[in-house]
Image (cartoon, rainbow, N blue to C red; front, side, top):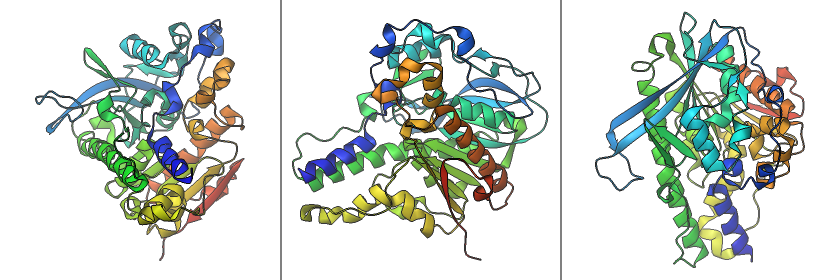
Amino acid sequence: MRNRVLIFSLMSLFALSPVMEASARVLQQTPAPRSEQLHFPQPTGPFGVGKRSQLFTDPSRPETFTDDPADVRQLPVTFYYPSRTLKSPQPWLQGKTLEALAQSSGLPLAVLSQLQGYSQDGTPMAPGRFPLVILSHGMASTPFVNTTLAEELASQGFVVAAVTHPYSALFAVLGDQVVFRTDGADLYPDPTLTDPVEQFLDRQQQYERVQEVWIKDLRFLIQKLPVASAVRNHVDARSIAVVGHSFGGVAALRVASEVQAAINMDGGFGGGPLQDTLSHTPTLTTVSESTPREPEAIPPEMEPVRAQLENMRIGRWLRISQSPGYAAYLEFKGANHNSFTDLAVLNALIPPLAKHPAYATGSADPLRTTATLNRAVLAFLKSALKGQQPDLKSLNLEGVEVVEHLPQK
C-alpha cells in the first residue's frame, strides 16, 4: 500500500492539472451571472493595458508531439503591454480562443463570454522600453488563467509575453488551426511496468522529456522576443524575467541563469537534480499552505530513488538554502495550487465554480490571495530587474510566511 501511495503521489504531480480539465457540470445548470459582476480585478498601475498576439516558429526544432515529420515547433504568444489608453473593461477572450476554452474545459460559453478583463486589443504601446516578463502556464492549462497577473504587470510598466506550449496546453491557436492537448504530451505511466522503482523512473523520464521541450520553448523566446517580435522596439533586452506556474514554474527556474529574474509559482519538482534549478539569478518561489519541508520515510524497496523522492517532496524548500543567489520562499496560508491562477478570481466572480473540487482555491479569500500574490511578484521583479536585492519581508504580506536566503558576500 505504501508503494502505491508513493507512485500515486508521483503521478498526481505530473497528471492533468485540475485548472481546466475537470468536468464543470456544476455550472451547466447555473444561470449566467450579470455581466457587471464579471470584471477581473482592475490593474492598479499608472498605465493602461494593451494586448496583441503573435505566432512564432522555431524552424530548428521538429514538433515532437505530432507524427508529421515536416512539422516544426510553433509558439503562440499573447503580449500584454503598457499603453496610454484609459483602463476600461474588455472581453476576456474572443473568437477561436473563447470557443476553444469552452470546448476543452466544459465551462459554459454563455458564462465565459461575459468575463471581462482590462487589456485592449491592438492599442498603441506607451513610448519607451520596458522590462520583459515571459509567462509560462501549467501542464494542461492555458496562459489565459494568468490574465490578472499579466494585466497588473503591464499596468506597472512591464511587457508580458504569455506563451502557450502547444500539445501540453489545454489548447493552442496556431493560425487558422486550433490544437488540443494530445496523448503525445501526456505523462501516462507504462502499464507494463510493475516494479515501483521502474514505474518511478519511467515517470521521471516522461517528465524530463516534456520539461526539455518547455525549456527549449523558453530559451527560444528569450532570444527571439527582444529582436524579432511585435514589441521589440519597446523591450529592454537587458531586463528579462521568466515567471511560471506549476510545470511552467519549474521550467522557469531551469532557465533562470539565462535571465535576470525567475519566479516559480507552486511548481513541484519532478525528482531531477536540484542543481538544475540553482543559479546566481534572483528567484522567488511561492507555495501552497503546508508544502512539505521535511523528508518522509520511504519503504526499503524505494531506497534506490531516495534522492529523487526527496527532491520531489522538499526540493522547493531545500533549494532556498542551497541557492548561490538571492532566493525567496513564500508560503501562502489557506492557499492551494489553483490559488496562483485566475481560478481564484473566477471563484469569486462565479460562486458555483468554487463548489467543484477541481476548481477549489483553498480557504483563504481568493481575491485577497490574488492581490497579495501580485504585490509580491511586482515587488520582487522591480528590485531584481534593477539589480537590487529584493526585500519581501518589508511588504508585511498578510497571510504569507516569507523566508529569504541572502547570497554570500
